[in-house]
Length: 348
Image 1 (spheres, one colour):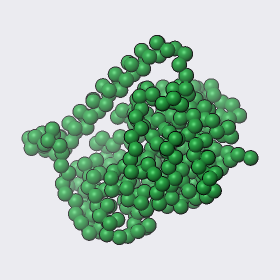
Image 2 (spheres, helix red, strand yellow):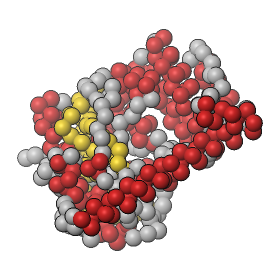
Image 3 (cartoon, helix red, strand yellow):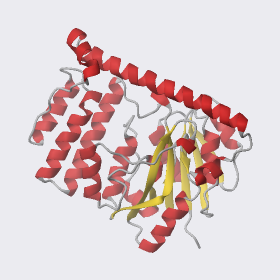
Image 4 (cartoon, helix red, strand yellow):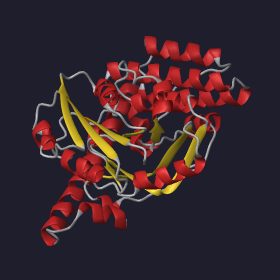
């Protein structure tokens, strides 16, 4: 009998996207699957839309609003699958995503190996997504994967992974303290519980850009800055548990420096903790520097104001691009009213 794959979808106020996400899960060419949607106390029509798909294959459950990590933990507790496919409520899977990864898993015959895939950003039109390989798009050991991720500021999107139940249990639950980068921290533990990762290029994931409201957006939120720093400390501990060498400490210092602008608030307690961590790694952090476009603002009114200007500009730019893509998407819908999403994803 083919292994059962559980596709687990946490959802919160995702009424605009949830139908397409569930359709992409149902369209998987891997026949033996279950789909579990856990709604995290949505205030919109997410639950009502999801329940239209309820069947022997699709289960929809609700819980009070407790956060994405709690919803994911609940979804896993309800699952029966031999393999776990995490899928956020606004993202999409290509139809052959799971089948391609399961074929490689069958060849490897090692349930302690992780399976990853390519991924690309999109806003409204997945057919416009561009898959751009990174140094993580290959077979890697856990230590090499973390060195590349942290040293080059890379990541793999949540849905790219297909994880055996054995590894998922060994990794433990999602950390409910983390408001952002919860997936980054979680998959560090998944990697630590594995024998390494296998990259399957023909499997693909479409990662939707939803603007400043997305969970991973930090902005100037003190709570999110603190949560981000917790995740970073855990990342460093995980990597050093695999190898505590000069090259690892150098990469960890660079990792702290790269992310410093996201939680720098001058002489704050968080900055003191970051400097102490840098000293423990054998180095020190330099004050974050802004690009020339914002350096003059920093000279006039200070770093904090310049950083806020940068964040505001990037947000406006992203929203304009998303608005344009939405307009083009609506026009294409009118031109091709019978277009099938699964066909578009498969043809990309």
